[in-house]
Image (tube, rainbow, N blue to C red; front, side, top):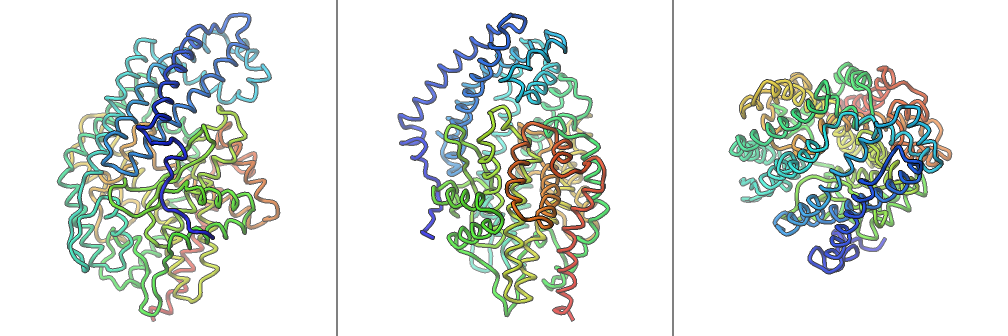
Length: 602
């Protein structure tokens, strides 16, 4: 494999970047296109004789505009994330948001007209050959339009959002990105960005270093705690007000609707997790013994296993890329070919440097039918899993290119399916290639980081967020009370396995401050368990499974998750059986870790 560049190629998208002619011209064209579409949407008459043809025309125009706006906004976000000090990139991101606002107002009025006609007339309308394949999404739009307020009120909400929820989320991004974690470690003094500190805190094999970073981390977020408390309260308060105005009967209702799932499905999933989590707590106790720690604290949960006679597994970036592609090929040629193309063409920003935002993601550039991946690669086996995870997301988007714009918009819970599936392929390949018993334990530990995150960490996030929203409905929830709610949630999720909690986890986790998606966290656990069920079917019948897998992914944007599971897996997600089977599959790794590590402890 030729050397893979670790940074994005911005000029391949817009020569000259955000200030270049290509990008600035795109914004001008986008503005003109917006005005034309608003005219089309405003003139639409659902009762007219030509309503079917007019609806097709409007929807095609909306699709192109939305893809074009997403493309421009995504590029600005990419530039901003690659260098958080780039104020111009932040300004361009907001400029795109402002440019789209009038369209959103007009589109809201447009979809409200879907309810002018009765159900029978509506069904006749969408029986048009060009509309019938979009029936699921169009019916969703019609149902959601019933929640909308009057035109003036919806326009006001749209205009307020950039200085409301989006504004508060932006303040969080800016504030957290400018935090410095100052700490003295065994190799000297460091002034880390949040992203760098997080990578070092969880990845450093020295427990003293991990503890020092954790203490400095907590101190930094405690210092800004009142600010973050203000932000999260205003975000939640704004959301609750809008949800009430749109007749949601519970703060979870919008998240369930967004994820196209029933409350019974969510409850069945958490029931299975709570009933099956004991083995993962036992795994953490065994890990504590292997690490020879008197206490197991928050920063030790994801710590690497280090043995004197067995160096910690590490990769350089090119080795990781080669390994991921090689393992994808064992599953199917289409996944492997796609991943190689993405890596060769610099779709991945992986360089470990200052100034980048923390975390990782996969995002879309619809005008070129491509994805881009953001992460920071430090050389660990965990980073290699992250690379596979994000390439899984990108593959999901890739196979959806054959679908219409309206059927591409799959929800976050099923979005995590392809990513976790890809990660599982690589994790199992790692295990199969272990050269010794100790190395196998190291790799099992990396794989189990995912399970403990999904069943314990994400569970604690859900419990915290639920408790917070319950209290926020009654009034402002202060800094210290947020800390208390966080540690209470962690205690419920982890049991008594940890000796030290992370009170400011709520402040340091970006996911609690997302302005567009409420309850951002539980879809991770859904996707993880859903993908395990899918992977179990692959193990039973691997022949030509890639085609079945792609067919499932292509359906993710046009049906509920319950219907998706029934069609492709033949299971009922509202019952705990399916979820219990997934937990049990993950538990096999925990059992293996506990059994195989006993010899080292005797």
